[in-house]
Image 1 (cartoon, helix red, strand yellow):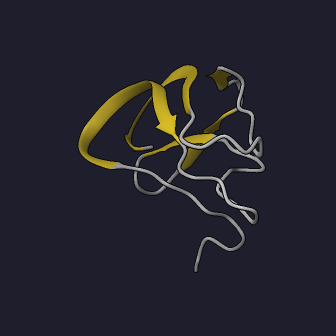
Image 2 (image 1 turned 90 degrees about the vertical axis):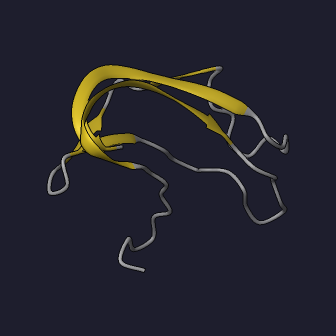
Image 3 (image 1 turned 120 degrees about the horizontal axis):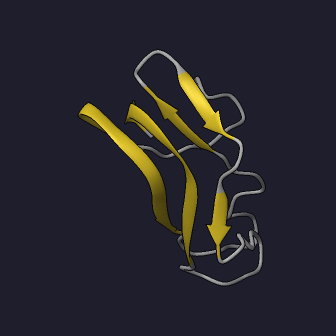
Length: 84
């Protein structure tokens, strides 16, 4: 689609919120996918997106390690927006 070569997931909220962290659980890994090769956190207001360059996952994101349904917490500098 319009995102080009990127897959993404996100949420939109009706009013601005301050974001500091997200918890993400991957699904099943397959031979040809199910993980991210690269990731980033972006917070937006509906027209402008800002990438947080200091986001850190706990535990460190393992990517293609063959383990299904791993959960990561992503902490980043506080950012205000309506979308993440």
